[in-house]
Each structure stands twice: as C-alpha cells, then as structure tokens.
Image 1 (spheres, rainbow, N blue to C red):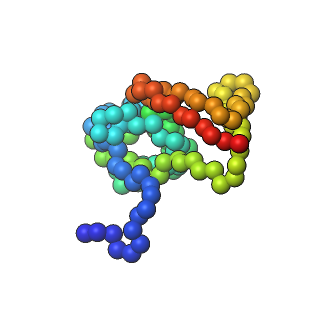
Image 2: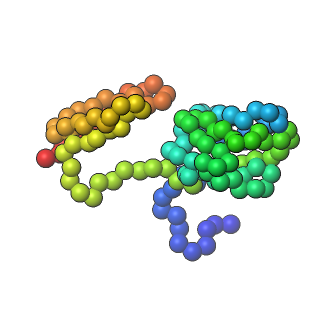
Image 3: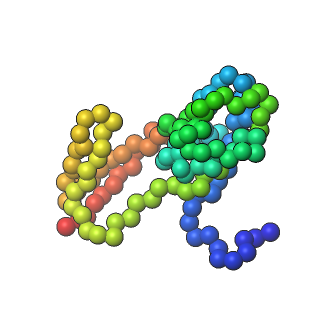
Length: 136
C-alpha cells in the first residue's frame, strides 16, 4: 500500500541490516551495515533502534561511533532487533559564505578560505571526489 497523504520528498528512511543474529548476551558493540556495506550514522538521533520491541533512547541506551553501535547493556541471546535510518544530514547554505571552519577531533578548529578553491576528498570506500567552489 502506498503512502496516504503528502508524499515523502526527502529522507533516507532505510532499514539497516539485522544485527540480532550476533547477540550473545555479553557483546555490546556491533557493526552497522546497509546491504552489506558499512553504514556511518551521522549521530544517534538519526536512528530508530528497537530491541525486543522496545525503542531505545539515543545516548542513553546506545551510542554511535563511526560504523558501530554500542549498547549500554548487552542484548540478550536470541533478542530480535531492527534499526531504521530516519534521516541523514544534508548541507545547504541560505547565506553567502567565503570560508569554512572545520572542527578537529583534538585541538582547535581550522578555517579554510573557499574563494575559487578546488578540494579533493576521499570517501570511506576510497574513491576520490573533486569539489570546485565558486564563491565570492
């Protein structure tokens, strides 16, 4: 059955691969995957996590780091679970900008002048992408 009402126009809304087969009652950290590929959640609030029919509270019942979820207490052996991605972070600039401050894992933020710059980034799969900026 299709969606009744306004149609979705954005959002990931995908179910991640089932991790419940690896629950053993003592393990608390599990890899997140989508169709077998590592999934990097933007933050724990972008996921709906349910274990044995109980929706878990982000940052209280579980945390996310890169492509891993860590539960506060180990899910029981045989427990069922599902994880749904509710949204992914997108960036849009409604105001003009000519520099970007980027936080570091340690230390202070770095500011990059964006005027006429080209950047090459590498995604998690190892593919390189060029980004050309034309800002005033």
